[in-house]
Length: 215
Image 1 (cartoon, helix red, strand yellow):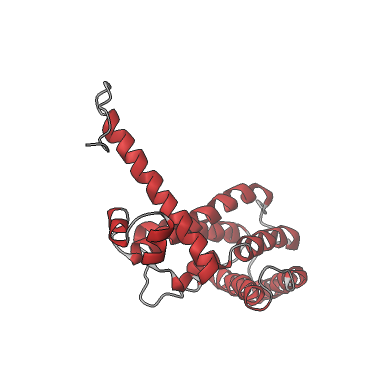
Image 2 (image 1 turned 90 degrees about the horizontal axis):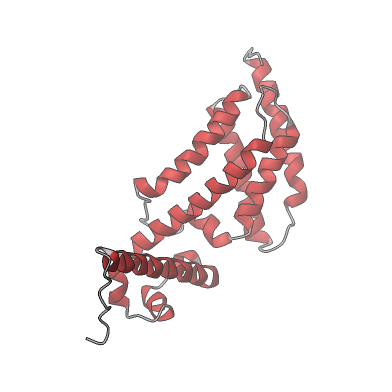
């Protein structure tokens, strides 16, 4: 029993240590999965290669993740939690009144652009679903729903509806996808970001006036 761990005099300490070790191994597997995804592509993740990289046999991965889909699910959840954390940090600097202004939206756009382009594999998993058949679990969706709920709240304060949110997400994911596809690691499309935001503001202002809304 060389691998046996000595019993701790504190009741319950051994299960706690095992749980922490189990979670530590899961985190190591996920970190390694991200590293492989960034090198090989998010859709090319191999369980055998992943197991070898963390020093275990492929069947042992099932002790921590029951399937490849569950690994993707955990990675998806991680990505959205990171974006949610950034949104929470950024929100105090975003518009808190009812006046639609370009500069705060430019700040939001730049931060989103940076988040997406700094990790193309993460962007692809979160926004493009490159793996056939992968559907995130409700638990993994939770952070993404909060990100969009917060966006909806900010836009509602500006008098903007869900159509404006759809347009905003089309524009933001579109320019980041183009950057990743045509100039990965660069900033070729960054100079167009402010102009894109200005076009968005001009458009929604026009739409708002056309619908007779008041700010």
